Length: 245
Picture: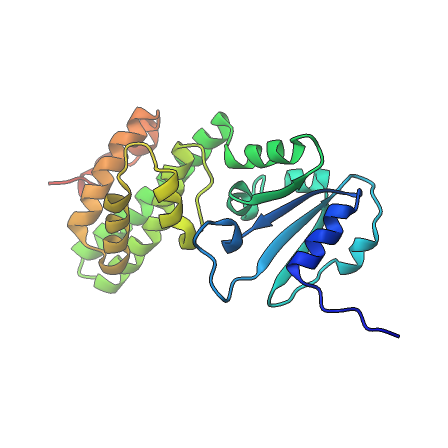
């Protein structure tokens, strides 16, 4: 009996494209981000099956190798992935290889890439409060001579800062690996890519107090214009420690 040859990305895509039970193929990860793939990058592929479809391709469900990882889902399952969840950014910037739903797969992807206004406003307020909390702790620890704790809190604050800024623009925050890639192609309104990246790097590495306050000054202005003044005002007199002097 002849053994089945090893499954490759190209051979699987050819099989899936020929199978009418497959409604879509969606490539995510480094291979979907132009210029980000390396010799170590595999192909992360969602195989979106028509709801109720049966196909022999499911024998490959759970396949993982150094070259190819496969995830099989039905259309309605695919619609729900990342809504919310960690996969949202990955699928928002994924590459659609096959769409048998007359643009239906693309519409599902578009919904992942653009957060609804009410959801984004709520999320931005929560992330802003978390950012202010870590910022305040960092500055307070610095004031009290707790330098290691101050640096750790400063590094923590950057996560919440980025979540806030992307939520304000109604977008899922990119993974750290793709932050520079994302900002170069899809800038955040009002933020120069290099200025923001330099500030993020400086604060996360050093916990520099002046850099944190300069960054907060810009965030406060942006957040208030977006209607989040009440979140900041709830910090009362603690805002004095966060602001530039």
